[in-house]
Amino acid sequence: MGWSEVAGGYQVTLRDGEVVARNAKGRELRAVPTALRDDPTVVGLRQLTEWLARHETQCRADIERWMVRSLPVPVAVLTEVWPDEAWRGALTDLVVAVLDDDGGWDPDEVGLLREAGDAQIGLVNLDGETVRRAARRVVIPHPVRLADLDDLREFAADLQVRQSVDQLFRQTWVRGAGVDVNAVRCGDYSGGRYDQLRHLTARATKLGYPVRGGNAVCRVFEDGRAVEARSWVGADDPYYETETGDLVFTDRHGTALPLGAVGPVAWSEGTRMAAALYAGRIVAQQEDEQ
Image (cartoon, rainbow, N blue to C red; front, side, top):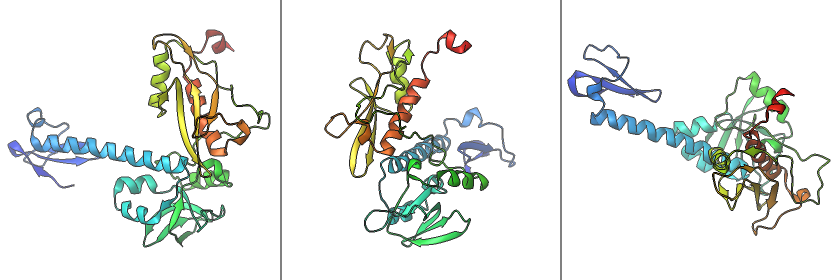
């Protein structure tokens, strides 16, 4: 971005999300002079910085939603947003797969996204080769659906890949063999004590989980159906003590699902939510000493 003239012979610009100023001799200053803080150009640049930050956050949130909900993404959409630096930065190096006409994808044909345009995508595959694939739609697989997850993680680490959206190194949970598939509640992360309910609800909100009817909720679309994971947080006075409760999964009608009927993505994301809420609990002194 170029330099803009402002009052007093100063010039200002944006660099790495910060307003930078230099004097009439061209020497950059450590801080924007106080006299310029209310200058319309400086105010405009700061507002632009704030907007760009919100835009980047929204891009990442949208992409994460595509992943968690297993939503097909038209390549035409990727082509349209690719010139936008925020979108491109969030999409680059995500693992993607080309969807066929039936909505399926070949687990062996995944790669790190490097380019999108003209009904094609550019990928780096596990062999380290840059390939182009004709595609109308792609999917950003949830890591629990990646058969070669360990290999992909190792490959990404070797390439020093840093994903803007938490995909490859996202913590995942798999339903264990000891889970009662006929039960409708999972208590693995219940009993986490909080001094006040408002602390638990604030943690849920900060982590991105809305609280409704006393539950923190995480909504997932999997195999064509909506599943909602619900982790009980409490519905009393916000200043009362509370504990995390059981994790349940419901269909779109609110009916509890047997744990054996919960898909791998819903199970992983629901458990991820419950574990994150439990992790913020008050740890007793005796637990610290163990």
